[in-house]
Length: 133
Image 1: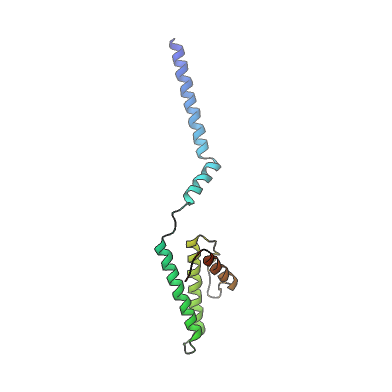
Image 2 (image 1 turned 180 degrees about the horizontal axis):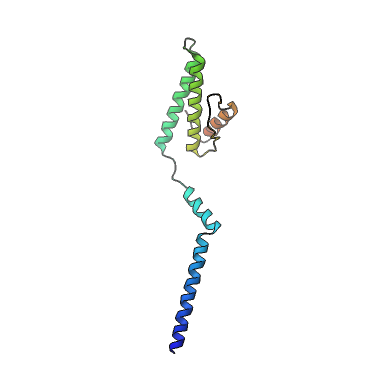
C-alpha cells in the first residue's frame, strides 16, 4: 500500500511538472503573444477635450492661411504662408493620429513639404469621421 501511495505522488508530481512546462510554452507561443499585443493595443477612446483642442488649433491655422493669402500688405508673404502651411500640415497629422488614421510620418526637412494630395486625403478622411475646423 505504501508503494502505491509513493507511485501516485510521483505521477501527480510529474503530471504537474509537465503541465507547468506546457503552460510556459503556451505563454511564450506566437498566438498568445499576438493576442496579448492586440489586447494592449485596444486603448480607451481619445480624450474629447484633446480632440477639441486639435480642432480649434486647426481652425486657427486655416484662418491664418486665409489671412496671409487675402492680405496683400503682409511682409514676407511667401515665408509666412509656408510657415503657416507647415504648421497646418503638422497639426493635420496630429489630428489623423488622434482619429486613428494612418499617417505618413516622415521627418520633413526645410526643403520638403507635404504633397497637396496627401493633405487633401487627410482632410477628407477627417471630415468623413465627423471632424470640422
